Length: 140
Image (cartoon, rainbow, N blue to C red):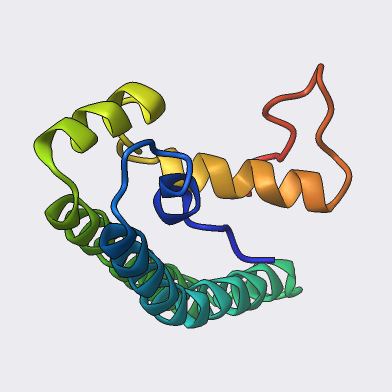
């Protein structure tokens, strides 16, 4: 299951949004989901393909490296899409609302934060996540 974008889902909780801002944010959210869901799906498929390459009796180093490069490009594209989305949200909000958002959510998702959140999300899907095991997924 793909990770849900943090900002648009939480924006509804931000106080003092105008009706116009709410409509714009909802429109951005839908547009963003349409952009990221195919990317997230493609990433998951490429991860499965990479796993299959690693599980082969005879490792094909060229194929593994090529698949890692494909994954890297897709992840970069996803991160840029998310960044552009956050920038679009920021253009809708007033400076005070942006300050409130930073206060509510911190300074945003730093480098690698999205991947950590996705890994935790996958752990929860697989019922591997527990209160004593916040970093349950092994690195592959």
